[in-house]
Amino acid sequence: MQCTQEQLDEGARILKRSRSLAVSTGAGISKESGIPTFRDAQTGLWANYNPQELATPQGFSGNPKLVWEWYVERRRMISDVSPNPGHYALVDLEKEFDEFTLITQNIDNLHRKAGSKNIVELHGNILRFKCFDREHPIEQLPDDDRIPPRCHCGSMIRPDVVWFGEILPADAVMKAGRALETCETLLVVGTSGVVYPAAAFPAQAKACGARVIEVNTEISAITPLVDVYLQGPAGEVLPKLVETFRAL
Ligand SMILES: [Zn+2]
Image (cartoon, rainbow, N blue to C red; front, side, top):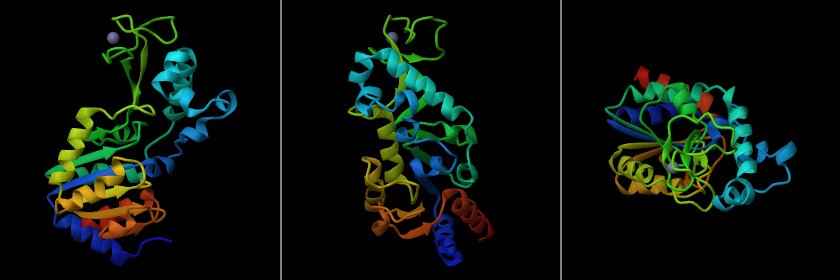
């Protein structure tokens, strides 16, 4: 099933009436680029470990070498992956609005790779690092034989992603909240609508008067709330939505 031109027109008209746009993206948009999900990546050597061992602070403390190498492997898996037309359509949309915030749950860096500028990474970024003990940001990994390498303070270095059981970075949550309160339209792309806090974004934006457009291959938990539901892959629907918007 794919959305109709009438539905695209309706979405484009909502965008046209807005000066500020917030976008919330989830795994769906990355999946179309071929980014393996956490589960997909758990093959071979990693098949016997569970998320508690690979993606929690306790897992890292217990076996830092294992977790470090798992993330080396995951970075390797995503390094060749390219953004898809859905990511590029969001780059185009950013240029059309006075205020634009892209809030993503994805850690794969694809929005940056595509060229989006004002990005809030709720779950961090797998290409960034920080130290485990004090969260010192690590600009460049030290030339260090130790696995994992160490921060100048002596702490182990870890990926700057949000692990299970960790709270989201406060600055990201604050920026996302501000964007949701002030946007006139919220565009939700490829999210399941069940992972909080992103699952609450549509209701939050609507409570502040925004219209909500959803792009998704399947009906999600938030679909009943949205003003326009555009069914289909983001890589196909978003370029059409931008084209329709520009033709208005
Ligand atoms: Zn440190």
